[in-house]
Length: 149
Image (cartoon, rainbow, N blue to C red; front, side, top):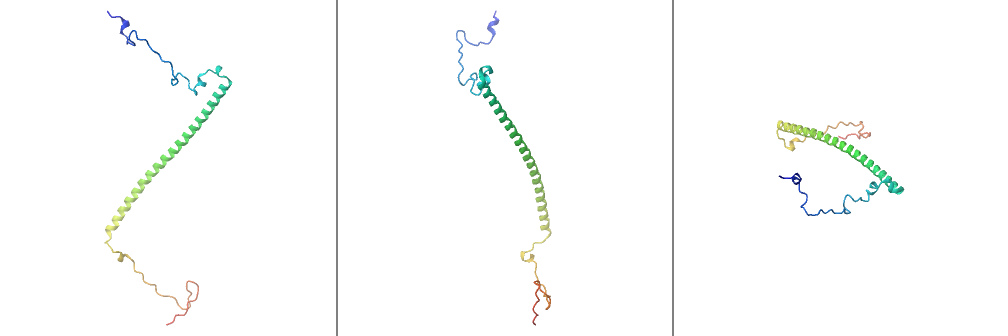
């Protein structure tokens, strides 16, 4: 019969020693310069350490508040830009409809009229008859000279 102790997962071969490495400088167990004040108990830090810790907390809080305000402002800008994009999309649809109507109107007006050469399209201008008399003032307020016949 088999014993219960032998049924588990084999961790090591018998006779092989387990080696544990000492934590190195990159190990999370070693405190970094920024975490040292947080990991050291207040009774061992002293007044300078307490002042530095408080200054760091205040500075971080101010920076976080500034970043939050910046994020809010950027969010408002994004919302305004989205509204602008929606308005532009609506205007694009309106302009497309206007262009379609204009093209339809142009095709309707071109189908109804026969082709006319440019020479025929120009209106004929006839000179106006001379209605000035001898004693009427011209447009400058001067008396016209008598007409000679």
